[in-house]
Image 1 (cartoon, rainbow, N blue to C red):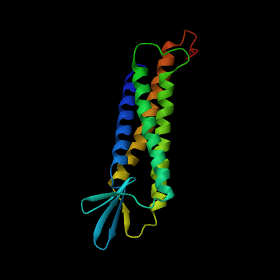
Image 2 (cartoon, rainbow, N blue to C red):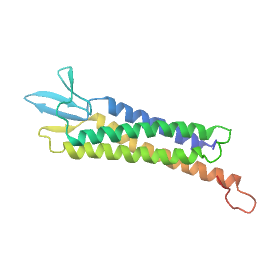
Image 3 (cartoon, rainbow, N blue to C red):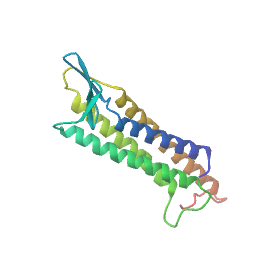
Image 4 (cartoon, rainbow, N blue to C red):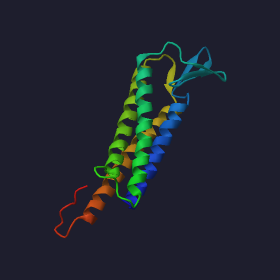
Length: 174
């Protein structure tokens, strides 16, 4: 799958994974104003006046968001790995299709990220004096990047199958 589409899919997979990692690592998911003090809340910590503490009294939506986001980052990393292996000139071991794996993992990354972000937004929507912040936007930017990566890998795989199909025009197996 050494096409430009495969390379674009790999780049977009990298972008999506990095965006999700940045989003998960930062504390600007929710901004709260309490008695004139700005509090930034993320999935792991809450920061105010340059001091951060671990989140106390977790709510269920935070745990669900954490779990889905960690799985999304893992799927993103694996999609980068599969996409890179699909671009190598060596054939995959019997029964493996790196390009198909990259496609599936890219779409899984986007779905898990959307569930994590949506769960957080739905759970924190009722917070008094709160507004969503830039870390959440960074996470949402990863969702279409992962979807586009999967689409690029899928189209690259289809083009490669068409190039390798016989003179009869039937697609090859694999």
